[in-house]
Image 1 (tube, one colour):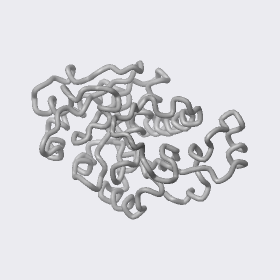
Image 2 (tube, one colour):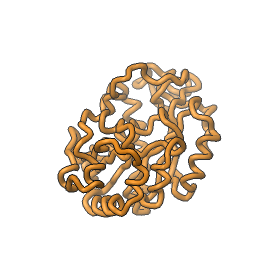
Image 3 (cartoon, one colour):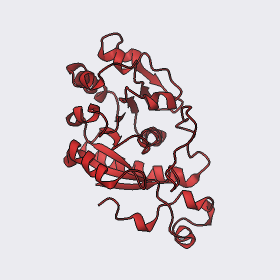
Image 4 (spheres, helix red, strand yellow):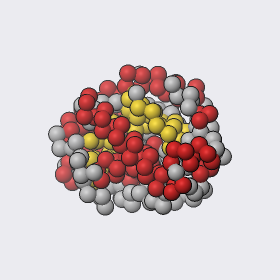
Length: 259
C-alpha cells in the first residue's frame, strides 16, 4: 500500500481563512521540499500504475477539508510534467466543484452536461496550462449527483476516457457525508485516501475505508504532519531546504498513524 506524508496545513488545523477559490497550482510553488514530496508520491503512483495497470484512480478523504483536491491537482501536474503520461483530471465532486474553481475554470460545459446528454465528450475535455494535463470540470450542480454517477452513462464515460489517457485522477467527494464516492467504488482501479492528522478522528478514516472496502484502497497520504526536530530535518534533507521547517516536514511521532 502507498503511504506518504505531506505538509499542506500547519499543526493548528486551521485551513486558509479566505473563502475565495485556492489556486491549486500556486500552492507550494515557493517551497522546493513541497515539490519534491509530490515527485516521491508520483513515483509510487507510477510504479503501481505500470506494474498493476492501475490507471484510473479516485482521490478522496473521509470528510471535507483534508486536502484531497490539492493532492489531485498537484499529483496530476507532477505526472504530466515528466512527458511520459497523458493525464486527465475529472471533477466528480459535483456539489462543491473545488477542482474546477481551483484551476480557474467555469463549471460548464462539464461532467453533468455529458451525463445528461447535453454535451459530447470532446466538448467537455479542456486543456490546461500544463502540457499533457487535461481537465473535465464538474458541470452544473444537480439535485442528486449519486444517482447520476450510478447510471450507465457514467460507466460509458469512464470506458471512453480510459482509451485516451495514460492516467486518470478523479477528485471525488469525501466518503462519509454523501453517497457519491461509494457509488462509484467498483468503477475505478482504486482510491488514494488523504488523511489530515489532528483534524479528522482516526475512527472516521477507518469507517470511510470500510465503506469503500479496503481492497479498493491503494494507499493513504498523511496531511498536516511536521518535523520532530531541526537535526532530523537537516540529516535527511540538508540545509538547502532549511526554511519554515515547522510546517513542511512530517513528524516521527506520527509514523504509526496509518498502518
